[in-house]
Length: 156
Image (cartoon, rainbow, N blue to C red; front, side, top):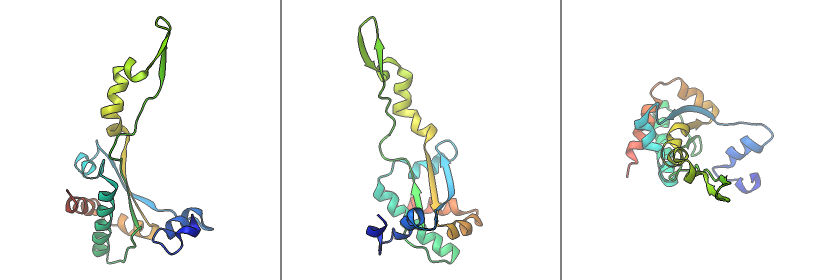
């Protein structure tokens, strides 16, 4: 992967993970549906292309506010995908009927959690930054506002 990535914008990311010296992005912001529902809704379950657009806009805003040059992969957004991911693929044996039935049919609670609430309870939106950029961002309390501005400007 490192060889394939040489000369591309992701080369630094792969070198930081698989190269001779580890250099990982640092988390600069994390929130859930219950902590900041407005911001969570702006980012969660957005198509990948939307997240890329928001990330590009956030890089522009951050570069301008901090007076630094940011590369295209210096800020990364990790958000829950468009489709819910949780599936309870467990079969329960019913001895009286001598058959197996999916847990989601047996337990309405499991079905409800899988389809509606699980992602909201568990999933988080996280923003990661290149280490030096993360330090600069952490000195500014308004970064979440920059993120909101970036997400709002990319709304469909």
